[in-house]
Length: 186
Image 1 (cartoon, helix red, strand yellow):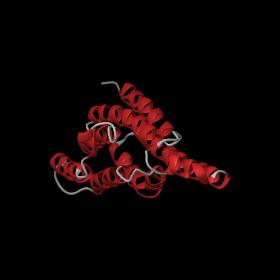
Image 2: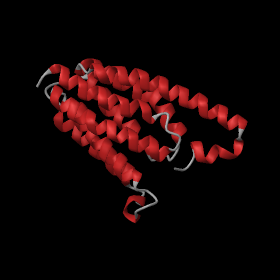
Image 3: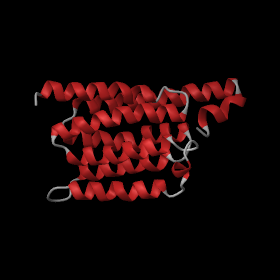
Image 4: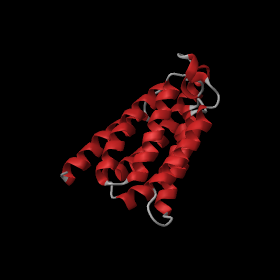
């Protein structure tokens, strides 16, 4: 497939992922990010980068299940985050080819941190994870995989997460009663 088309799919995914950190509610953040992650699964599949494809695929399913929390009884099960953590590790280990690569370990660790922080029900925790853990680890992976759009997405996404942190902290100072809506339970 044409390299320009593969990168274009990545740039569409990038728009969803970057925009997600400016969505006020945690549920909206997750749904917008999931749309981007599904497009990135296609992007990495076309790049032949199967660790990223597996990690994002499991992460996207995790996010879909999470988005049903509080709406569907089956989605309220307390063990989902552990199940998806194990599935993520298994999926990444299955697609690793040859010897151990730091970039593959970074992909797995990045998505594992995303899986665990999503279930925190706290948009602020999700943004902090993006800024200090998941984002930097995924940058390493995207460089190794050759994804121009996802590298830009991670850098811009980390900046977007930082802006969201500052923006919602400022709102909290101005109106402390909205704290639960902005940072807490989704």
